[in-house]
Image (cartoon, rainbow, N blue to C red):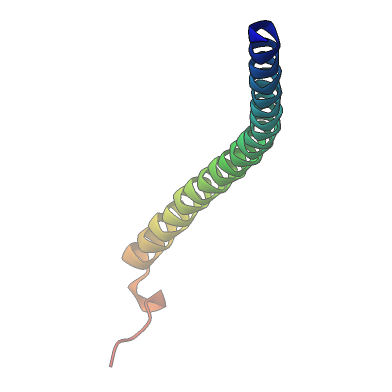
Amino acid sequence: MRISQIMTSMTVSHAQNTTSVSTLSAELVQLDERETELRDIVTRTEEKRSWFADFREWLESVAAFLDEKVRFWPSLAIPTF
């Protein structure tokens, strides 16, 4: 009788542990997929940040160029009213 109770208890425990492992395995797969998505988002965000930094640098160089032109040719300046 006692052996059958122990076997029943172990079988139930094994079933619970198997369910837990299956649940954790599925969660791990979801987390791995989410990590991949987040890494892709970070990569795209960094590419955009880099593009905007380059654009800002280019725009500032154009502004400096135009400031130089206005300084040498004041007649080109836009009149303010």
